[in-house]
Image (cartoon, rainbow, N blue to C red):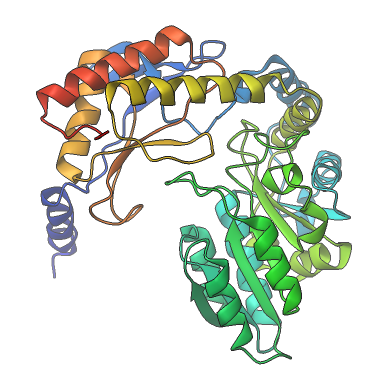
Length: 404
């Protein structure tokens, strides 16, 4: 059997649907974000990145860079093994204490990515709690879905951000069964924000644990960057808060925070923690420097919010359709995979603007989009250039404008 032919056939089908992903070969430039070098066809040219999840540009902040360089010189480049054997380092424990403080929790636990922290925590909770039932928001990230699936616990899906549907489903479940309500604060593709207070109140009413993914909110919301739950004064009422170090904090890694017994439970039973090499200490040191800075500085958050508002206003003036939400994520709706890919290529080739097309299975078919994430380091001129490019391409490609 020729397996390569089987692989190629499915790849060809993906390409014909317009859903094949082409990756740009970018080279980030320290101190120049959001500029990057694009390597293509043997040439290199500068582009402006408009889809980075380094939301605040902290990946190039001097404090973060200095902390990583100092730690590399002090500890070397690797952790030396899994946390269970030889990989637990002083920098890991300092970072976990910083994260616990960020969310007002007793403890925290590090993972190698936000995907792994969701997968490991939910799969462990669902499998180790006898007769556990996990109620999952219909819009939850693939990492949460995969963790729930792997747990083999009973799963109940409730309509996205629909608190009445959540309550109806909780009311129908056995009162004495362990229940976990799993949801996100900011949903990465639509940019909408969960009604956290109402969800927490319903979960408390039925004795359910709350599991909140704040990966697209940490660093960005709240007086110290603790996320939407901090901004709303609700972090203390949420059982487990999960987050990432790889977006607004500008480094890499994931984590959970909660009570000391909860974090110790995950530490002791989660295969995704036990059997993987620990984050390098230098990464932990850099993440801690980023978190500490954003706890004290609101400048980056305020500047980002100003640029998000400026972009939205400019898109509105030109009738460019974008999804309304209260977050920093600006989805410009195309609703066709081929046109989305074509627009992204034109923006890169003709305008020096890099934005990755978002298509199925990341979003449902028919909701394809370009997802823009303005940062505090995108200038007013950058925004004007982007909107001019979109306005020009909208005419050339005959894409519908917003109606009054």
